[in-house]
Image 1 (cartoon, rainbow, N blue to C red):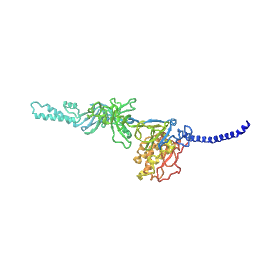
Image 2: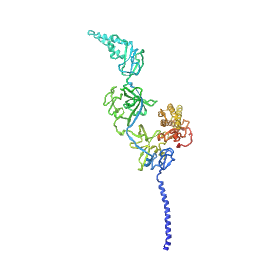
Image 3: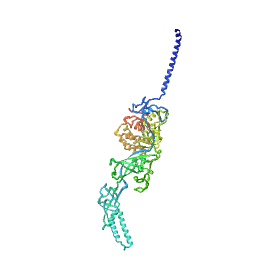
Image 4: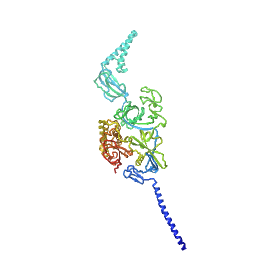
Length: 638
């Protein structure tokens, strides 16, 4: 036994050593493989789109700005404008997607205006002979009268002569008998008819002329009677006044029908049609809604207000509507491709082209003017057409506006079943229809677009260095190339407008609430006085806006207009530098630009709340040197 152990022990030691060496060699290799495998796993870090230095292992809120964190890396291979998320990441970010629909674009217009008298029912009473006002039966304006009521009594020698001629002609005609010659009978008949016609032309009624014939002696006074029922809207004479032939005495308005005069902005005009139904209310008759039809759309636009007059014919049999009353009107309209308006209530109807209140079930003539009725289709209405001709609609919440561009994030096919892939797509927008936009180009029916969380996707593209919404807009890309410099007079006015803009921006960024409204009014005045047509959208956007929220909402439009002129026409003329800055968090995450003379960030959209949040996008001028040599970067205010 001892001999066996002596012989075996060396072999046992050699075997154990061999095992130990093999284990030691194999273990590090296994550890290395494991580490390599771990390195191939996708990162699960979450970061902030505004502050990429923040990196956390779990989703949550940014400790600096409280924005939702987004995945730092997306799985899979993506294109230059594509981003991919796992289903868990999408759920954590609370994404919402909505299909692009094909259906009529519906919108409710809110218009304001006032009531006026129906000009077609206005009647004027003039003096048909010279004379003196002996008596006024209607001696104040606003009085209600009926047809045939006495208005005034006039003394006139002319009427005395005319009555005398009729009385004598009547007597002469009565003396004609069977023994009279035919020629004498014809002559006296002609004189009698001429005498009556003379009085008729003096606007005497037939019964008045008959009464004169029955008189023994003529009178030098004549009573003027009301030609129609209505309200006396104008009285130009008093008792004792001398009047001449043709002089205006009274104006009478029949208020059984009235007009509602509305004003519509140019962007509202595509939604309005002749014979369209309009509903309106007035505070003078609370609780009651009135209805009429569009009778006239002014073909000319008011250049000062950028509005067109819309006239609505309204029945006023109860007399509740009075000229001068202020009204609030609503027009519900649905448009389809080609600009036609859906109006089921007019299907199969025939309408008067002059009086839209005249609507019949079959062809015929207008009861008022006698014109031939026309089918509703000829007036721009459509009924039960092919639904495939309806426009494409995209939710307004899906659209990211970047100056002149509109971007949506569209879901596209993913290579992996457990990931969602989105692509940034530039689209062409049509009219705004409530909570939707009409899509002219860029999307197809059935596409799904992100309606909640699109800005987070755009921020992910920015972090990855890809093309995003915040990339330089086409209008600002490249060096300035002024094509038509401003004249000295235009440049002076434009510099004044820029100065007013910078004053407003300073008041907003430094929370000078007492100066904001006044600065906005001064800017509107300066923009109007500039005389530059490119600035008209800016004037309309900012006009009558009050309060910080309304003014900051209009600020992007003003910025784009001023930036366009600065870069394209005044870039080489302005002595002071002008920089274009961007805040991606402005306007509920849609992002917005503003102008500044320095690279220093003073955010007008948030003020002290996020004073230094933003970035410098470009310098729009070429002559002036930058006031600061600091590079463009993202600032934040804690």
